Amino acid sequence: MSAIYPLTLLYDAACPVCALEMDHLRARNDAGRLVFVDISAPGFDPTPFGASLEAMDAEIHALRADGQLMKGVQVLRLAYEAVDLGWVMRPVGWGPLRGPADVAYRVFARHRRTISRAAAPLIDGVRALRAWQMARRMRQCSGGTCTVHQDEGRTR
Image 1: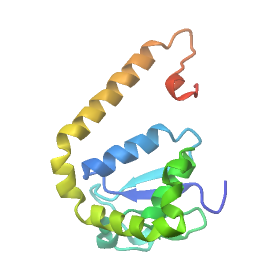
Image 2: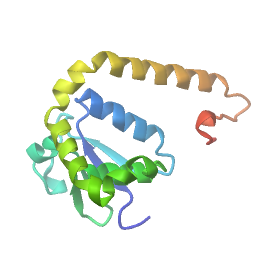
Image 3: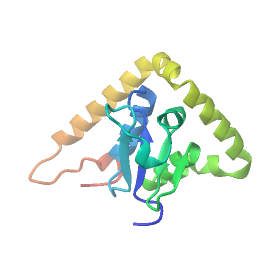
């Protein structure tokens, strides 16, 4: 595809906030530009990726198609770009916002488990809403045609 994509996201699925975000990206990954690897899965081996498990656990990492390992906010910017949501993260790449965004992300990453515990009811609510929306859209499927992403302006 390119030097960047497919982009292999190395994320912690045991972190509810992280898993929720990856679920969102996965649902929009129609072009297959993202590959998802759970670093918390039993038997996960970080060796082929060129970083330690401790480093990957400290902040999100990604492996570009050209073999370059990336981490932090730049990974999220590329992931959002891959699913046509680049505009959401584009501002955090702008000069005056880049530094504060990087610091804010590192603070979040360091405290993500505590944040996940505090946000558990909200996370559960978002998951339930997404499941309900998907079930509603799936009921619209008939005759071999399904507009699963009709609300987002995309069809399947």
